[in-house]
Length: 210
Image (cartoon, rainbow, N blue to C red):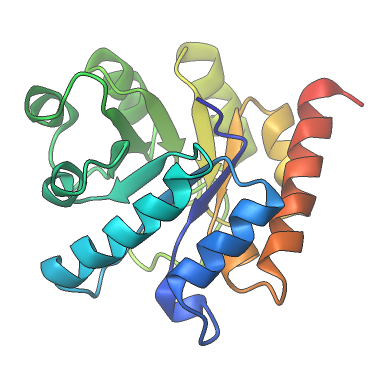
C-alpha cells in the first residue's frame, strides 16, 4: 500500500466545499489514501458519506480508511480503519475485522509504536510530529528526533501527521516516514488538487533523492 500522501478529511475546514468535492480534487492531484474523519456526524450520516466516498475512491483504486469507527468501516466495507490510543485496542479490532482489512494505529510515543507492531497493526500514524490546531486533544508534539527513533525500532510503514505541510514534508520523509498525512494542507487549500500534487512531488523527490 502507498502511504505517500494520505488525506484526512475535516468538513469544518473545507471552506464550504463538501468532503466529496475535496476528495475528488485530491484524487486529481494523486492522493494515495483517504481517511474519512467525521467527529460530529451521527452514525447514519457517517455511513451515507462513507458509501459515497468509497464509491468515488474505488474507481481509482484508492483505499478508504475510516477514522475511529470499526463498526462504520465494517458496515461500508471500507479498506481499513484507523484507531487512536483511546479507541478500540488493536488486538480487539484484529479479532473483529476481516483478515484483509487495514488497521492503522496512532502512536504518541515510541512505546505506542512498538506495541502497535506487536498487536498486528498494518501501519503506524506517528502523531503529532509538530503542533497542530486541527486536533485539539492531541498529545505533545513528538518532533523529528522521536520520529527517527520510532523508525529505528519499528518495521511497519510510518505515516507522519500533525502540522505536516509542503514546507516540512521532505524533512519528515528524511527522518523515516513513509508518507505524510495531512488535513489542512489539502482541505483548506484554495486548490486542493494542486496542493495534493505539490505534496506528492515533494514526497516523491524526498524518497528518490531526485
